[in-house]
Length: 320
Image: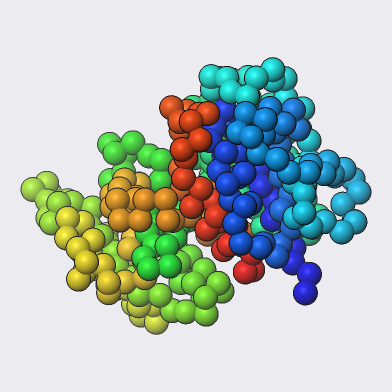
């Protein structure tokens, strides 16, 4: 059986991504060919730094019709002016990251593959307030409006209704239409990926789902949205208080817990599973995953970064 390649964008050049990539490809046999979009010069510098030895095969994007396997590192070279393995994160990497994404998008649009993993990106330097996150940047490139972030673990996943949004803006963003849209995305994703109707729990916005203000979003918005969704044969319930839903006896009732804002659900899931989770973008016409961590500049060169999230990202796509 022929498996479509998995495209990996190394992302921010001054991150721990290549370190965990070297660690990840030492693991079990991967059936799908891996193609790394990266600076060849940077790759060689970091391979030398970490003492990692493997044959490198440089690919020509215009001639990707030959057989590719994982006996070597398959790389599409992206020009990047670098003289040492690590430098401080700066705007210098902007064009490099932009060019890397452009190559990946071209391969996806051509039908060559439908599997993409991107390494961590410095939102401050690359996105520069144009998009709240890389998820929105990619969705914009493919003109997709209805998207969702799923932090996936086979035991429990979470989905924030709003993503990289300041807390003061969250309440203004929450509405019935948005909740219905995200929960429909979750159902579709689980149905298409796992042939499963997921059990979904929804967390309230306010502490204990109560409010001293005139408007209680939990009563006025969240509860009616859940009632509407339940009529569509979607297994959803709530709103639940966010301070107790992640207790063992409570979280065991659900496949996915939906929160109103980013840290409301990402903090507990990272506490529970640490690196054993992956960030999946729902609603795109292809699979897009990123390991559940950032550039981690403080850990550069220490050879102590945990590769589990990238390993799980590759495993997930290898089965598709």
